[in-house]
Every structure is written in C-alpha cells, then in structure tokens.
Amino acid sequence: MTDEKDLRSLLESVANGNVTPNVALDKLKNLTYEPVGEFAKIDHHRQLRTGFPEVIWGPGKTPAQIAQIMEVMRLRNPVVMATRIEPEVYTALKAKISGLRYFDLARICAIIPPTIEPQYSGNIGILSAGTADLPVAEEAAVTAELSGFRVERLWDVGVAGIHRLLNNRHVIESASVLIVVAGMEGALPSVVAGLADCPVIAVPTSIGYGASFGGLAPLLTMLNSCAAGVGVVNIDNGFGAAVLAGQILRTANKLGTGD
Image (cartoon, rainbow, N blue to C red):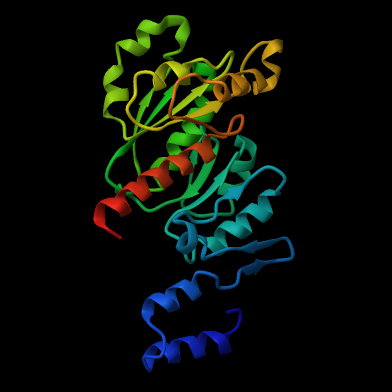
C-alpha cells in the first residue's frame, strides 16, 4: 500500500463491497511515510496503529530540521510534540513556527489546539521523589496531558520524609495508573506500590551522588522491587512512562466498551 494506484484499488474494492471497511482500515494503518528533505521520514499513520502519533526527539537535530518536521506534521495532526528541547533551541524554533508552545520544565515544544479535552476515563497520578526529579516527572505529565489523559501531580514526596507521601495518600488511592519518578536509591516506587491497587510505572532518574552511577542504582532498585505490580522504564524516560500509562488506560477503556 505505497502508491496512488494501490490506494485507488482499495477504495474501489470498498465501494463495490469486495472489501469491508474494517479490512480497509487495517490496510491503511500501514500506508507509506512522508519524506522531509533528505533527513526524515514522517510516519503519519502511527496513531492508527498504536494509538499515539509520532513524536520528535530533539537532541541531535538542528532547529531547522525540527522546524521542517513540525510544519509537515501539523498538516495532519492536531498535536505535534518535540521532546528534550533546550531553551536556546526553542528560541530558534519560535522564530520559524507560528503558535509554538514551550513547557520549559518538561523541555517539550508543542503545536496544540487552544484546549485539549481528556479522551479517556481514568487518571494518571504522577509522583516525584524530589524537586530535582521534576524535569523527568514533568516530561511524563505534559506528554500524558497532550495525549488526552487526565493527570494529577504530587511532587517532592520522597522516602526521606515519608510523612509527605502518607499525608497525600488520596492521590495514590484515586489514580488509575501511577508513574513514580525517583533518583538517588530509587526506593519510592516500592513504597507506593505497597499502598496502591493499580499499576505502578517506575522511572529512575540520573539524580544522585557518585554511587548512583547516573541512575543505574535506582534502576536496579526498581527492578528488584519486592512490591508486586511495578514495571520499570529506562533512566530519565518520562516520555516512555507516559505512553505506557496511556496504553494501559486506552486498553482498559477498550475493554470497558467491549471494542
């Protein structure tokens, strides 16, 4: 399904009743990509296949390349995101792209409509152990919100002052999925999972003294959690945690509606 001839043939087959709309949709999910210059190929149909559109990874790309990709993507997507965008890159981008928003703590640039309504029932609770973990936690929170999910934030509730967490147990109890972000020794997800009745996605961060080995120590702590129901993503991967939480809620919504 890579050219106009194939697409026309498929549409004619639907029109004459030889192919059902559902079969046609499955075929359309694998339509070809759109080249941007000689440096990128945009996968416009990723949302059809996976439920989430393609998102631009900022590091390693020039502002001119990011701007070109975003302008192509905005023609087909109401929300266009670029992650790990540093302030100086945003300054260059906003001169090239109209209506660009910048979420500075999350380091996310986005082209978005005036309002984004939640598309799914349930909510994602996002907890951070310390203030230094906020860039990763906010990356998760902003990604989830721009993807159409409800988010509740709870920051700076690490185990060094456990009463801060216990005084806010309502956030844990009301969440459909939890994302827990922690550096140092990475103990917070295990504690939260011992209190929660929903999936817990643990995100190790690279925050910590030398023996944390840039996030390896909290990663291993989270992988070795004795609490059940904890899944772990890569170091500093707030974006990946948000997408995983979103997939859990999307699946629950599909099962709830019988689709």
